[in-house]
Length: 136
Image (cartoon, rainbow, N blue to C red; front, side, top):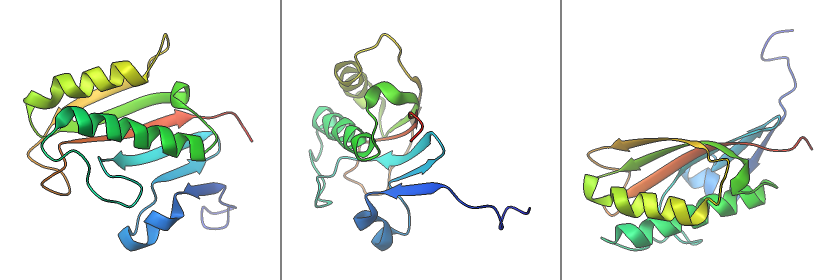
C-alpha cells in the first residue's frame, strides 16, 4: 500500500481559522497533536498586548490551552514546545508565563529562539507545541 492509498487518520481543529490562512491551527494524527505557532490574538484574530511581552505571553498560553482543549487534551499533555521571541528582553515574560501555565512536575521540552521578527510586526512571542493525547 502506498502512502497515498493509506487512510489518513487526521483531525484538524479550529477549522474556521484554517481556510483564510491555508494552514491548520492543530492536526491530530493518531495520539499526536501538532499545534501551529500561537501568537497573541484573541478569538476574532485581533492582536492583543501591543508592545507588552507579558500580556502577549499570557494570550499565547491561553490560545495553546484552547487548542488543546478543543482536541480533548490539556497542558499536561504537552511533550515539546518551541518558543520564538523577537528580542532577549521578552525572555523573562515568556518564562514567567510558562511557569504560571505549566504546573509540573512533568514539563515539556522547550527550545527558545531569538529571531528578527514574526508574521506581523506587533507579534513579540510565538509558541508551537506537540502533545501526546489519550487514544480515542
